[in-house]
Length: 360
Image (cartoon, rainbow, N blue to C red; front, side, top):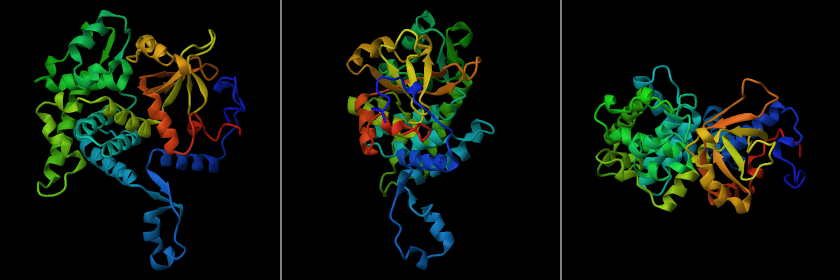
């Protein structure tokens, strides 16, 4: 596929309307890439011994079955659906947030699981960011970074939105009262949604309390029992080693891979710097409004002429369909993480992100 259009930007590749049957197949493939379903061989006599209703509960379309992560994603949806209305009226959890919540359970260390759970809560609604940047070169941004972000989020803030939001959440978690949070009117170059963040603080406590109550001291440790001791000092309980950072990036990629862009380190003067890998369309990025430090990441990825990131929001500008997409809320994904993701799905990058809308 990539050889067919070698030397051309992905937005110049030929496309065609997508038949419904192909859309369904693509949806199944992406759920499989998220680790929520997997293909299995259905035993020939399976339907003879079970009712049709029982058969349908276990198998999807006769050959796809829910994985452990898929079941945990549904369980996370049920849990958040129960807890969210207490703090966020009439709100449904997103499938990406629930998938990240489930992927967190599979991470090897308690600290990495805590970080991924918090990121899942911060990602629960792409239309309601808890924090954003107007101008990263402003004194407001420098003050915010130095005074209102802590821990692992502060350390890796140059990797982008997820880490910045995490650093701010950890700082907010240390505060006694909502009134202690910075006044957004005094920081016009930052977008601070303090009420939203304070409710997320309470939601984390609700989830920790939930797992506190269902955990049996004599039984096997539940993956999220790690939340329980974290309430004393959440900053220390979320510090990560470099390999744990890669584990968290892998969970982010598995849950949010449909929000994925390739960023050119040296784009042509008249070309947008990014390509949305779901639609193969050009995408603009306003790096001035990003925590992701393009000036830092660009030379580190010069050898490969590009690097990759997941985005929080994708939208069309007011000018309409003839203009490039806009992406915002970028979070860097390390090269070794996305290459491993491609190998695990038996597809080399970037082919594992092609859609059936692209002519083969």
